[in-house]
Length: 246
Image (cartoon, rainbow, N blue to C red; front, side, top):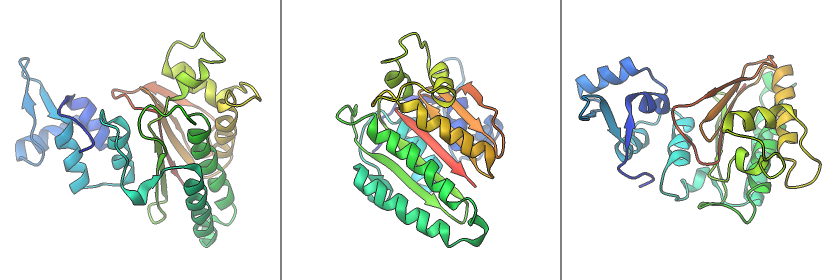
């Protein structure tokens, strides 16, 4: 099991599943996904039951990555989604680029999509080498029919790595903004923000969108839009989680 029996609020559960709280209440009444009631009569959901629900009713890879990333128990994901080291990731990302190249509609951007995937995935390995909190490696999956690519890691997260060179950073939201807007340093491993800054520019110039979360801060960049929509999330992730759409 990926998760323990701790409880989630209805808002946290809705965010994980990508539905509204109204939908959660309807599912509770119909028995599709039952809650338990606290002393305040609020609805709560067991983490392990939400994990089982997603595994048995997977909406997409993104939900599976969320569950793995926010789990309190660090275990490797399914082998077909798991890149234990950078060599495995590079081989799979190269295969992805080859598959993207075969899609005529993506002839102008397939290499850029590959660049984004490479930057995000390589960041995970470069900035956690020898310092993985529990499970080394990344979750990496894609569905070309849905035009969706998902990457996740259970590493230190952006705030922890950037505080080494910017100790004044106070929270995940500040760290996320810094990583996507500032050139930090040219010296490894402090150069984490440089690659993400280039990712932002590629997304802003093309028909590509990005969701990125680290800790309890999430960022969204829409297609051909350089604006950063950063907000605090109701759930907290280990390391980083990203979804690329094109």
